[in-house]
Length: 187
Image: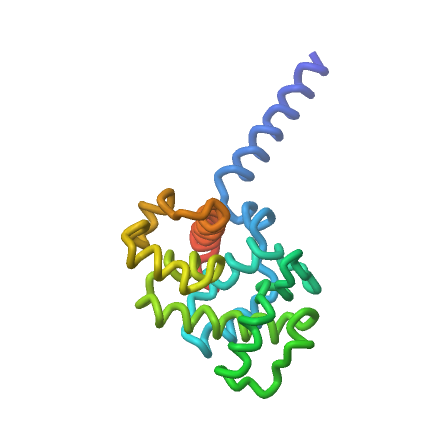
C-alpha cells in the first residue's frame, strides 16, 4: 500500500510539473533567449527598426557569439561583409565605429548592422521579407528578382526565391522572428 501511495504522489508531481512546463510560455524563453538586448533596443530605436527583426538576424547569423568571421569574410554578430561595412561606415558617418571594432565589439556591430537594415528597409519600402532577403543576398540581387518577376517579395512566396541559401535564410529569420514576437510581449 505504501509503495502505491508513493507512486500516486510521484505521478501527481510529474503531471503537475508537466502542466506548468507546457501550459506556461515563459519556459520557452530558455530556448529562445535574446542577448545584447540593451544594445539592440538602443540602436533599433535610433534607426527605427524592429528590434525583434535585428535579434532574429543575429540569432541566424551567429547565435549571439561575438568574434565570428565567416569563410567569406563576414564580420561580427551581424556578419557584415567587409565591402558592405566599409560602404555603410562611409555613408552612416558613425564616429565611434570602425572596421577593426566590428568583429569584436557587439555594440558597434549591432549599430552598423541596424543602420544597414534601416537603409534596406527604406529601399524596399518597409517590406520586411525583402529586407531579410537583401541582407543575405544583397539589395541588387533582390531588386533584380523583383523586377524580373522571379519573386514578388511576400512571405507567402518565399519558396520562389531563386537562391536556395537566401530562401533558407529568410525562412529561418522569419521562424525566429515569430518565436520572439510570440514569447516576448515587449522588447
